[in-house]
Length: 235
Image (cartoon, rainbow, N blue to C red; front, side, top):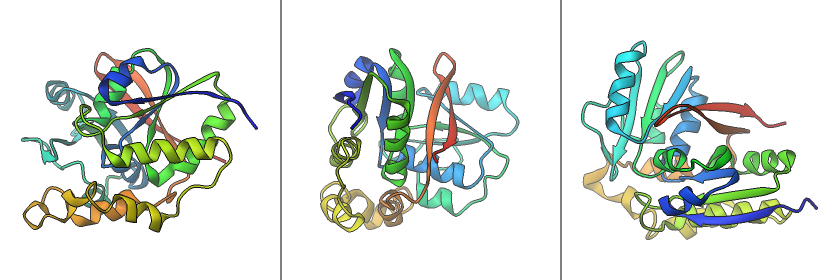
């Protein structure tokens, strides 16, 4: 059994303390959305924490697609909300993407002391565990970003718990068990009738399709407030 020193951290304050190989966790919805974007053959995905940076990139890149939200609501002038379901219904082949969200993307930007960063969501949790075990880091930081990076979220805490299990060789909860645990109150936001145009009920299902992708998503710094997400298949 591989011995890894693990720091379990939370929120933006935790991201700032992250060291070593770092997993920035955002289940609902940033890094689930990113996985579906890669599945839809997006060419490049850039993440930023500031709306101003996204608009700057829009001027510099070749007709990029802007995706993002603040408090779950699509950012004005952006093309799509941070919805894995809506993203999955479109073809992003060859497109450059700029993604900015309330918690997940801010977490990566804040993790300035991390040696390497990968994104965490349930759609590729096994791939993340295998990647970590193959890397054999001396130190692993797992950061549950929560809601807006300021309040704990059950889904991100549960991902942290289950990833810890995988790393010591234990089995994790089934997809049905995870959905049951997260349906309420964590998932309530997706079942509000008036909010379906922003947070559709399908996002709950799409975010909890356990291990439907066998790749990890690495974050590589490009410039201040800009990281590029890169897909890496896990054998």
